[in-house]
Image (tube, rainbow, N blue to C red; front, side):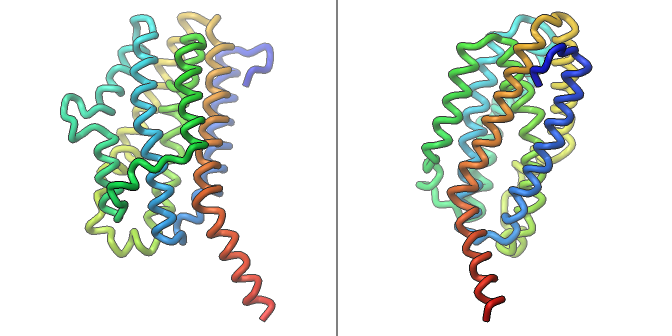
Length: 250
């Protein structure tokens, strides 16, 4: 996304193409969730918990660094919603934890974070604090609001087809997914894109740094999920493939 010359229109074309690639990657990666043993599915879901927590901290840092204007006001509004708008019980990490507990995740398992993803998330926070503000807009403004919803929508689509999830659908707390895979989150993405476009119109010189930050976000986001799937999904997929191969030979 950093090819020269990079215009605002060209940037959005490349951003749209990147989002389409992300959708394709997500679709391929998330498909096994529909057949995954519930123990492994719980592990996958727990790991996303840490992204929601770190995203709020990073978004607060980005808001603090941004100049006054439309983008700062919009991201402040999104931050307030993430924190429950004054009600801690409605803060999105708490809402997500209620989902995790409702699918049988043990309370002590809520803190079991993959070391590889600690590194990924800490790297994002470090870059956000030390790189330019424009880079941070690409990293956590676009990366958080424009990429996250894409993955979550695909994740939800496959996860809810899992036999355990279907069997227990009436007792599972789906509130987090209603928020993050519905119209509200789609609107957030559209508003964020419009605010970032205005940010670029007001200061076209920030475009290369913003694009660099978005590139970094894509790499980190894909690595985050690659670590999760390598740890919890791929072993089950490979075991299933070996089982099918043995049945075919017999």
